[in-house]
Image (tube, rainbow, N blue to C red; front, side):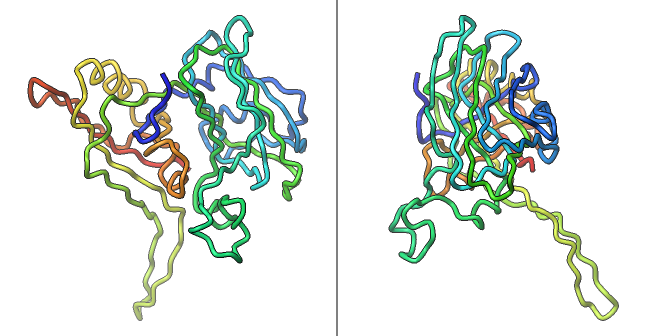
Length: 283
């Protein structure tokens, strides 16, 4: 069934750890680094047009493919092809832009460099961990994923990728309740001199979102939410979308995260179960 555009979307578990990676490109830092949990431990290739393949240990449900913490330029394109265990092509994205338009012309001045493209500028992209995300038409049972990258205008002279993410996609029957809270954690340290002059050791800020699902069935409560909490704990990744339609808020409200607060699954009355999640961005 196609994914709904306006719903919260949770993706887990990350199956890249169950993949064998292969490529004919030249990597100055190994391709296997995209399996590393540390986003800044990146794979690097000097081939600005390259292809690599992720082959799963067995066919598994996959509905999203993402490359996290990359340096792909605003003109970069990529292609995602998804295959089953019989090597039949299930879905082909075609060659599409890595950075999608998020601004309409009505939101930009005529003089803005991105007036025609609507894509985020360098400053916009620098505010968030770069993410190339492809959502398939549905969850497929997948054996192999082939990714092509084309970024010949990359001024760095190389392509780097911090982490690959591929997983099942889950959307609850009923969306989250009103009261969702987005915040920023700022670990900047502040020192004061004797005359009260303040000095700041600025650190990267991380996003945090708290959401409550107040209308979930018993089946969803335990086969999805409780299972998710058991599988990811507080250390493993969840790819979170506030909603999947691409607009000016998409980049701000989509993030690779972990569960930072463990709330119980609650059965407050006969008609429903409830569950709250707090997710903290990984950078």
